[in-house]
Length: 136
Image 1 (cartoon, rainbow, N blue to C red):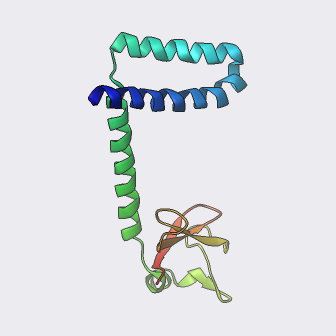
Image 2 (cartoon, helix red, strand yellow):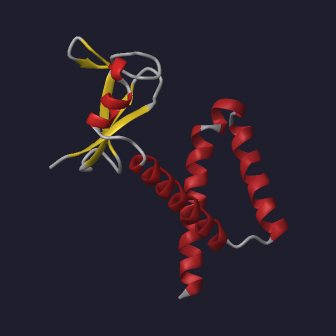
């Protein structure tokens, strides 16, 4: 079973890398870049005898760390009332402003996708996270 997972993981890994090499490298080096990419990648894997499973495990660990970091950043955001209480100059003419750059162009986005009930507002100008809210 582990051998089958190893083969499937290898196909997924090399498939993603080949897609990236088709998008990025031909625009830089043409066909030579595509061949060079594969020669370097295969030589590194053979030289270090790297197991594809370790690549997948590393990817999962990095992804989990980024999710935890994003969630903790969301938890530290104030709600709407707390944002206006801490930043009294962030409200003018019936509009909420960014407390960092003063822009009035802000939008909300979901914490884990567009359908997420946990949402937060960000400034479109400086990309600062402003405050959070939950959709009922």
